[in-house]
Length: 337
Image (cartoon, rainbow, N blue to C red; front, side, top):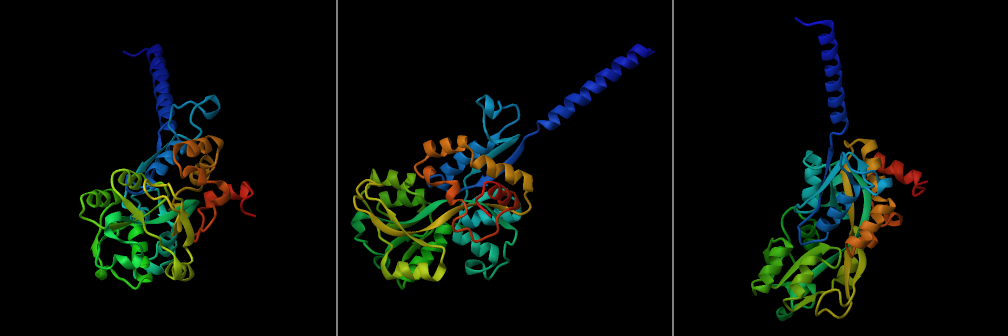
């Protein structure tokens, strides 16, 4: 038979249990995925750096005590993917909270133009930040004799895999030289697979869009004689004039073994995008964490391209609306009037 003391003890235990449950709920992690690209490219390592920078899992030491300076309770992760187009589709379908995309792909998707004109526009697509310029690499085996885009005719060329922004740009570049996929022996491989096939003598050239130095290309160049083919002249200028998302760019000599001279090419912006459905406060805190001093150190020390990710260029080339949370941060930081 329960006494008043028993009931009191039960009440205290129940209250304690409720308190513990409440504390556990308060500490429940919030997960945030970042779609990147292939593991041999630039998106993936940059995504890992940013995921680490914005994360502050439950129980972590606070920033002021030497812990993470990310968003309290947030657990961010960088996931390998097929690239820009795949990331846009995953965000639209709710399979990713965010992802990286080339500026051209993001704008076409959000406005239903360009490569998206025959499908439903992803009107909910929103920008968090422009990150860095992505150089278009046309990598050829030195023994192939390829020295221009026009020389790709009849050659074995990988245009990258379906769903990638690289495939989109490769088609545009071929067209600028009066070529189509039918004029080359087209393959659709990830950069790492393309590099392996080139080493084996089974591929003459492949396209890659990403920040230099790209790990997969650097590894290939250390084992096989390659050429970085220029994308320049009237063809390149025609692309810039027609599409507006592209800019002239240069891959410095010495970036890759055996390529000693500067190579003229074109580039697009790498951008971090999300959905308008993501909470304003969450994206505000994520944007704030992206641009704090601790993240600056991680970016500068973590990858050669990290130093080019700056708040001063965070709004460059963005052709889609900013997420309201990101916009609030940039207004507070004085980057938007």
